[in-house]
Amino acid sequence: MKSTAAVFLLVFILGCNATSSTETFDKQTIEKAREHVESYFHHNYKNVDKITFIEDTSDPMNGLMINGTVNGAEFSASVDPETFMVKSVGETEGFPDVKEECRNTICDYE
Image (cartoon, rainbow, N blue to C red; front, side, top):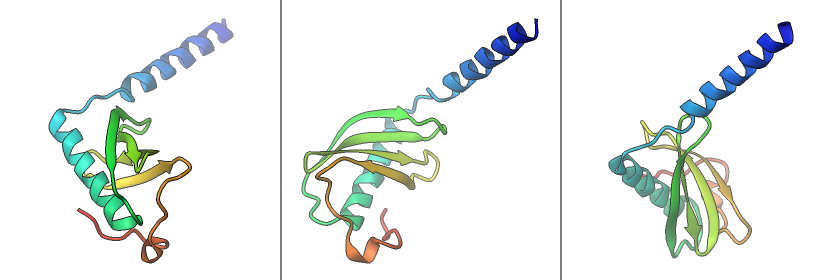
């Protein structure tokens, strides 16, 4: 009986987490997040020529995940949907290098 209750509780908890991480955002919020991500890349990375956005999704922490490419290299940027601050960036091989002055601290961006 205890194992059945434990399984039910686990499924319930996982179901609640899955529901909360699939929050959707309106077009205006996504557009503003994209603008901040674009500004972040231009201010913090060298030789950013072309940014293309692919897909927008929620991240596991109820934030907003902006995905795309910079100069053909893929990225995923986690953005706080309330402040539009870039929280983290995942980059693939070939992504532009961080500017020297932005290595130890994030350079200002809008």
